[in-house]
Length: 155
Image (cartoon, rainbow, N blue to C red):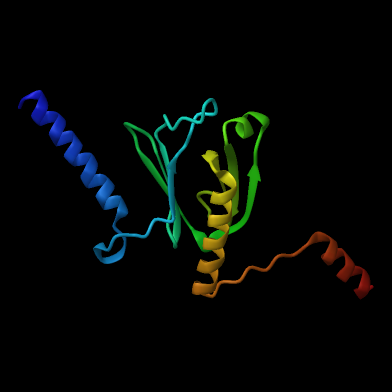
């Protein structure tokens, strides 16, 4: 096998893996709301092997070159979103989005150095709300201060 054939074979395998990753239920292509690579802090260049993908139903984190790992979090399991932007991140147009979830394998998903982070956070937030309505999932939040007030009223 020549080097050109080997390179073509590798490219075909990569294309097939990416195609499989885009396929959802029953072989239909998933709608992708947002997708990007993790970026380096300096200059905001996407030279890493971590890829983030948000679909209407789940958030997927693919990482690694030789040993690949794929984490999947259902959107309705995301409870809270936080956007943090350091001075250097603001200089390069980046931000870090933290998602608190009720997922056992990833209780806290941190999306590092995202370009246009405010828009992406809003996009994820809206997708989470739409998925909760679609699945008829509600979350009950209990505040410590409200619990304390209720206890005082009972006394």
